[in-house]
Length: 222
Ligand code: MD6
Ligand code: FE
Image (cartoon, rainbow, N blue to C red; front, top):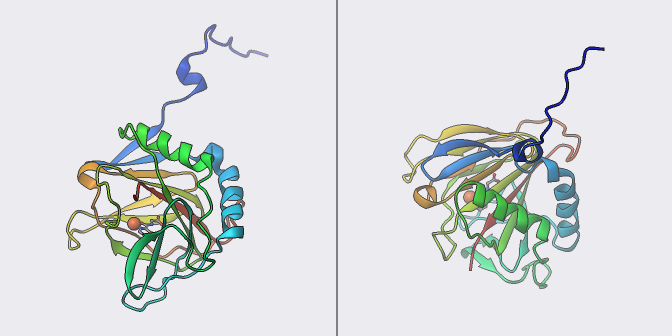
């Protein structure tokens, strides 16, 4: 057999390849496949969170039931009801504190933020979204967080989706970015208040999640 000899030295990059960073906008990047090595653990971790804080469909201040099912982990959790959007320390459904943020998730978010150029990131809130086929999230800004210097880190698992990433005005036409299993998006700085959303998820089956897309959206809320 004519196999070629291996090079004599391993390089740092051969063991730890640099992340695949794609610019989306000034302050926003896609880290392609960044979470892929942890995906199986992440899905199991989401299952454990949801066992103590079940997924639910929140109601918007306008009275609409959201098609995305949500839960949270961390010291703060994002909720919506007829009175508005806010962060709470306890799950309004159970009256208990949200499950603690697993270090698997917190560490991943800090590494992703660093890869995007945001050095000190300690997320305290992880919103977990579950999209069944047809679920969508309309264009919005994330503006309930105290510290605008801290970026948003978003981890996609399971079925693919089209992320809509607009500008600072609602009327700015959004870019359409395909998000696949294991992709991470980080937005902050000049993109921190960019309008964004998710187009309706197409029906399919994923080996790890079945017929759904999971998204972890990490924030520094308090
Ligand atoms: C996503 N989610 O699911 C992005 N923002 O890919 C969000 O942007 C989001 O689900 C604010 C509140 C809830 C969310
Ligand atoms: Fe958002």
